[in-house]
Length: 509
Image 1 (spheres, helix red, strand yellow):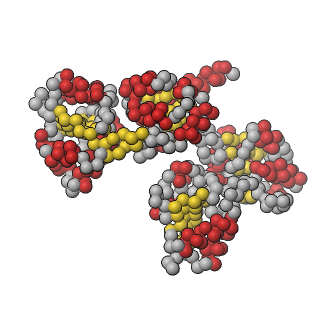
Image 2 (tube, one colour):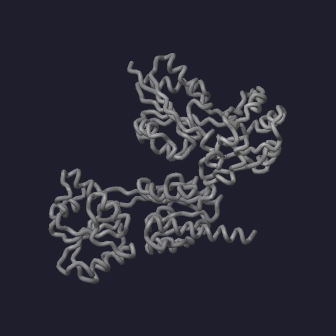
């Protein structure tokens, strides 16, 4: 029987950006993925659709899949000849029980590899403004597990730790926090020694509790701290307020639902996360190319009839050039044509194929696109529209009114998808005023159609363009319109509104 291959991959502290390139490459090739609770959704999205996914979601005090069974799963899947990826939060060998999993693999002669990950022991303090080493404060750091076996006392040499004078980092120690602090005090550590807890380190929901080893426990109880959390003890904790860069970002912890299609959400999501937002991707629409498109085939075969080729979204651009590629044609067949794009993103996508748009309206919507074309295109020039099946009537109305020759060819359809609506409903109910981004009227329709029985007055919409705004108005959604029909302008509008909210909250206090 052909033996497979097992790779232990450290998924890091959460964000996909902290996953190693090698780890990402292995995940994308996986046939089986066995993953833990702390592996984030955006990393799990890298798993191929045809891969087998096995959730062994261990958490403190609850092991739905015992470690022995996890070990056996790895062996069984490998013996079936599969490429098995064992995804573990942080680093596989930093209290991740990776060594135990390798023992059984080695015993069964199964080849394996280990891809290290960034451990929360260094990443969480860094995101809280705590350098775990600093030449003025310490010459070492020590990583200790605060987890003890059920029914057993915590086994830590507190005397040695106190004598080391280094920074102490305790992982999985929230349930034993009292014992840890008491143990350090009992061995002579100064009760005023700075200490900190970082909950959900590196994630949008990160919280930081600062204190001393004398009062940190009471502060943790007051704040209802939960795992995952890292405990740091040492003089370097006193630098946290000065070096804290993460919590000072404009949208830190602000929850924002992004409704764009999954393959288009990346840019908006990434930019919001850079500002500290807690982004929840909830694609409400799906772009599907029209198959066996005889109309597209006909216009491409007679492309010289058209003076202008007009795109109302990047989807139309991508679909045209993918079609040409399948037909073994290249951009030379488009020589002599002029191109118009509804906005900067569409124009950027077009430029990616080596074509610079001849016309982009100052205001990025269908009406202004059509009006501008009527001004610059000759009366005898024929216009080809490549766009959605259910495209806005604004463009064609203006072209007809100005008696311009055109052909409107749908190249994709917009499908409404309803995945995870219950989770979104709970999120909205628990976070009144939560932002929801709408980049088209269809995202509004898809969102409303997927949420049943929710008071839409609880959300704050951020809309791009007038058509999107009209769709939001139809459903009574309180919303703001970005100053320009661009992703950057949408983000600016969110930061502007959030600033006003924060200012109002401070005034009330």
